[in-house]
Image 1 (cartoon, each protein chain N blue to C red):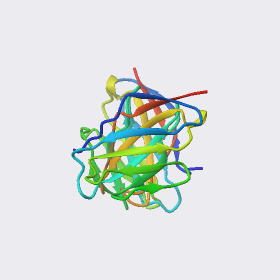
Image 2 (image 1 turned 60 degrees about the vertical axis):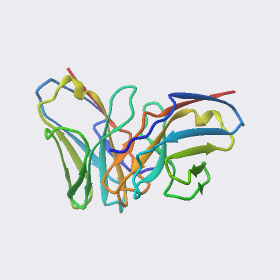
Image 3 (image 1 turned 180 degrees about the vertical axis):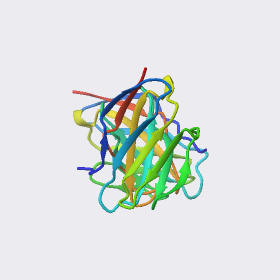
Length: 108
Length: 112
């Protein structure tokens, strides 16, 4: 199965941009790249997803490398509410493969 | 508001017993998937159902089984419980397997 690799943890100052990297060198051509975040004692929450092109929504931006072997989730201005574990996921037609996740700490 | 609800929220079972967890998917979603999340780990994909048929499965033994009903709600059944089955079990619903998924709050299963 294709897998993703993420740093265990990252820190950011409040109001500053955050770039969360993800490597997925074994991605298949039909896998979508999804990002979810999870707060303690809650289910994961959808953030953004894409296939080949960069994507923007109200929560974040997703930058996908041209070879699709890596991607970066960009939070433009981190807030304390963005502190969570962020998962990079390869979504095939029949399964979601979660990575190990990056615990983001936002400093006030 | 995700609209995905799971029951029960917490459950304690004895090793060797059987358990059934339930999930009500978001209205209109015909795909449901189940995940096991051990403490401090990321969710692990168990299986996915689309229109009442299992169409994808992770590396879990056959004692993990499921059902999806005509209203697209779902059940996860685990037989012969083991201590390592203690985890948070998450259900997610979506339009298809690779679109945005909405997760429930999970069922915390403890096997003693």
